[in-house]
Structure formats: structure tokens, C-alpha cells
Length: 441
Ligand code: ATP
Image 1 (cartoon, rainbow, N blue to C red):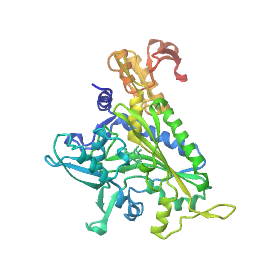
Image 2 (spheres, helix red, strand yellow):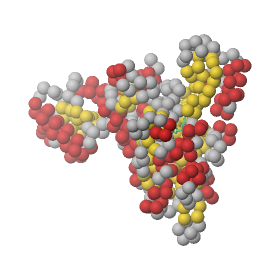
Image 3 (cartoon, rainbow, N blue to C red):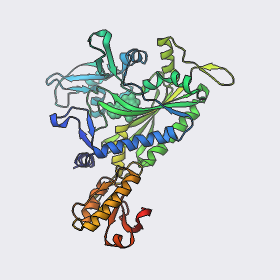
Image 4 (tube, helix red, strand yellow):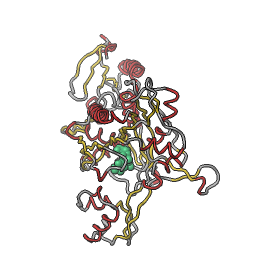
């Protein structure tokens, strides 16, 4: 089995990530977090919030509705252009993303090609579908999920599930300015669900149809964006490293002019070397005043910011760091996963490990040890929250089980504990054991 298959299997076996609606045969592109995955996700998103909101003085958070007025997506350009090129196998009707099909066929620089140019490549190279059949006409496919708001289902009631969290920030920019009066530059962060009807979800959670985003819009004076952009790139690299992603596996891709959205003056994609190949983990884009300008035009409401002191009015420009929780969790798991002989270890940083520790009695059939261990367990749970209890099998097996889910330490209560109040603490990474007083664990 490949490393990626081992990781996917571990995620399922130990309750990190399950296929969505699995009992009913699943639903492509959807995933459910199990008890350990839910904890890991909370810890990762918590780390984002602590790092980029709580510990700074220029950042605020919002938590906006997923279903927004459809005018949002008209003004942002999503209704007209949030689409991927789709092509169909004319024999079995299977649908593919045309740009992915070309990439898989080894065509260079696909991102820079227009739809017509991609079709031309298909014809010139006489490309077939992965099943060896003829390919049909290509067309653009809009990736937004539609729904209807209220009891009447007509064109008037159409709404979209948000394909990004960013617009929930932009539409609240004025509310934040009018309630908090922040000095420029300042930023607004949001963490939440996003939905994209991807043509072909693939690579585990990497390309899902329902996923989570952690996004920031950082509003600034247009004259200052270059320096701030660099600072955001550096801050994100530092954070990714703190989550265990090795520097050698993250790469800045300076997105060339031809591949960038027309309004963006600079975009860096931070790519990660996944076992499935190098791919986009996150993006940092300088979006000028495109979004606020659109909202001002479409809503007729001023998006101007009045600079304190000078009373100068301007529409702030924006730098947008955007990262998907699932792509990050996949990068974290791939970085932490180590096979050492017969031992599998998830070397997760303590801050994000689901369980902070595991408590167990050395022997299960000694009531006095079990009682003492339960007392220690209750104490640790009160102190650290998510703490595991394990009294199954022998101690070696318990260590292996905790290694596999990334628990940084195992605390074992033995006969000496009853005498002098010390426990054995075993470290996940070094496997070293030390005796520590219970109160000092
Ligand atoms: P891609 O080119 O891989 O489709 P994108 O450039 O469309 O991604 P953005 O619109 O920049 O992605 O979204 C910001 C971030 O959201 C991405 O960097 C990624 O981390 C995450 N993301 C986007 N699409 C998905 C998806 N289908 N599944 C999981 N995460 C996603």
C-alpha cells in the first residue's frame, strides 16, 4: 500500500475521517470527521484563530450566514464566471475537468490556456477519455450549489451555498468599520463551510464538495500593500511550520500574469508536496479594491474609509490569505505520519494533537491500581480536556495505539504510585520514560 493509502486507512480505522453518508454507500466529495478528527479540526482552526486573531491587535472575526443574498454572487462575478471546463466521455457519459485531463496527459502550463485553446489541444493530440473513448463537446460548468429560499421554487427564490467564506467578510466590512472604528491597516477573519460542486472530487479530502475555509481579508492603504503582502506570506510560513509542515515541502508559486484573476496584481500559491504530488495548499492574493468597489457599485452604498486625523477618504485595498482546513489537515497528517519499524507514529505538534495524554493503570486486574489511575485520569481531564483512558491489552500495545493517533504522552499508574505518588510518563517521539510526581505532570 502507498503512504497515502496507509494514512487514509488510519484515518478511518482510528476515527479521524470517514467517507460521508457511508452507511448509504457514501456521497462523492463529502467527508465526516470522527471523534479524533473533530478534535484535530477544532485544534487546527483554533490555532488559526489564536495566531491570526486573538494574539494580534489589528484583527477581528466575523461569523456570517452561509446563504447570502444572490446579489452578492452576481456582484462578485461568481454567477458569471465561477466555472470549470467540463468535458464528457460520449460513450459512458462520465464527466471530467478538461484542465485536469490535459494535466494528466502531460500538457504543460494548462492554467494559462483558454477554453478554445484547451479544446484545440484535445483535437490536435486526439486525446481520449481515461476509459479510451471519444470526448464530446466541452463547456463551462458553474460550481455553485443552488437552493431555493422560502416555499416557492422559482427564479426569484434562487440562492447559492457560499463557494467561499470571503464574501461574508466583504459584505460585513462596513459593519465592522462602523462598530469597531479600526485603524488602517486592519483585517477580518472568518472560518466556516464553503461548497463547490467540483466536477471530479479526488485525492481524499483534498478536493471535496463541502469543505472548510479559514480566510482573512486584510484592508490597507493602496500605497502599503507590497510590504504587507510579504509579511502575510512570512507569517503563514511560520504558522505552517509550527503545525509540523517541513519547510522543504512547502513552496511559493508566484502565479504568473496570465493565470491570475484580472483584478489581482499579485498572487502566491503556497504548494505542498503531498504523497499524491505537489498541489495548492493555500493562496495569498492582493485583490486591490476589486471586491469593495463591486459592492459599492452594486449596492449603491459607500465603502469608503475615512482615515483618522487627515479625514482622507479611500476604498481600502485588500490582501487575502485563504486556506482550506481539509487541505491543511491532509498536509499535517502527511507530515506527521512516520513508520518506524513496526511502529506507526503521528508526530503531531502537541497544540493540535487530539488527545493531550493517555492515562492507564499498569495492570487491569488490580483494583487498587485502577482506582488510583481513574483518580489521575479525572484530574488530568479537568486540567487538559480531551484525555484518553486505555486499560486494554498490555502496556506495549497501549503505547502503540496512542503513538498511532499522535498522543504526545502516556501516563501509567503502577505500584510505586501507591507508595510515593509518582507516575511513569512516556514520551511519544523519544519513547523515553521518566518518573514524575502526579501534581507535576
Ligand atoms: P484549486 O485550483 O485547487 O481548485 P482554487 O484556487 O480554486 O483551488 P481558492 O478559490 O483559492 O482555490 O480557495 C482557497 C482555498 O480553499 C484553497 O487554497 C484550498 O485550500 C481550499 N479549497 C478550494 N477548493 C477546495 C476543495 N474543493 N476542497 C477542499 N479545499 C478546497
